[in-house]
Image 1: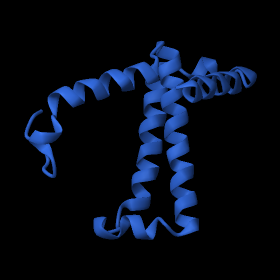
Image 2: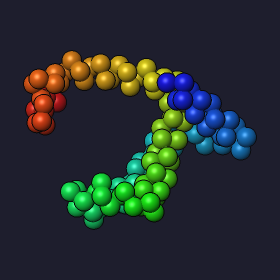
Image 3: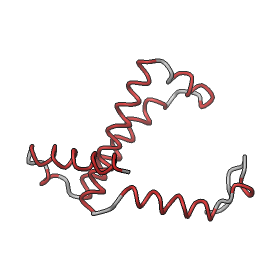
Length: 115
């Protein structure tokens, strides 16, 4: 998870160098994050689900998807930093909870019914 910490520091420094911290309140960051997720979703909007992996194997499409995913990640990392959330720890905790809630033997190959 050192990569997340390094990325967090780099994004924080990028914001400081530009005096953009003043614009990085949680609400604004969430809205920016949603916008970037929308741009990522737009790339897949009319692509049949069964064809998505194959279509995005093309270098130009993969690069566009990577660009939008990077935007999503940067805003998420910045939001976590502003709120004091350790994303690595939060993800590990969530995954541990998911292991408990969705035992592989119970949900293997099927979408779970549990909320």
